[in-house]
Length: 283
Ligand SMILES: C[S@@+](CC[C@H](N)C(=O)[O-])C[C@H]1O[C@@H](n2cnc3c(N)ncnc32)[C@H](O)[C@@H]1O
Image (tube, rainbow, N blue to C red; front, side, top):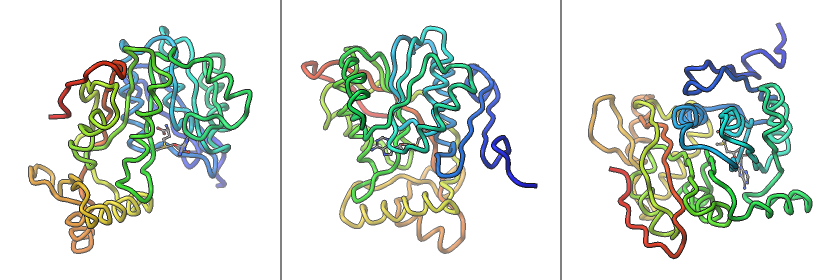
């Protein structure tokens, strides 16, 4: 039977439990638009479970199918969410998904490169929110040609133009990036406190059958070979021993088994660039 827009190949349905108690939601992801991943799912669950932290106006950096903006828009105290994405296919899918989930009035999706909308009118719209945003949601992609963490730094640095003082950033950073990279974010990009881990999966495979994750691991190996910070996988359930990217790759080649990571969402708070942030990183 041919796939229809509502078949599992192009549509993901999440139960109330999977959205942290928010609502049953569904997301269409037509070909060439972003399909939800385990990282999207933990971010959505976090939004539902931590809905008491979210109110007012929000941004969704790299909105993909619109799932995070739409989930947040289902929270009664949230007035408006603006999603930003570089892919026209994603923007189109996200707009349809907003209508499908009954929040078309509360969410707007803008074609943008990071925080820079491509159309002048959208640029003016977003600029009007400078310093007036209450929260930002971001499940950024892995970056190329560096340690894979570049988009997290971009999200944090740019967030300072939009968040009001005290505004929150829900940032997805999966475990394998290592605690030091999270700690370094607040050291290298002044203006934030690190307020802890909001949600985490158990140890799950960093599924190297997925070509995108295999590519990420190759980039991590190159970064370690350049002398960058080590990544932090586990090779076996229950093991406390940290395995770097090169070791994880060797293990996969020898056994066919993917290394383990945890998909996680962390909380940062904008305290202002004049404040001295002295918060430790993740334990
Ligand atoms: C990991 S996906 C997350 C999508 C969605 N938020 C989710 O959780 O499923 C990252 C998203 O960032 C978008 N993206 C990548 N580079 C971007 C950029 N420079 N500016 C805006 N969006 C970007 C991609 O198109 C993709 O939709």
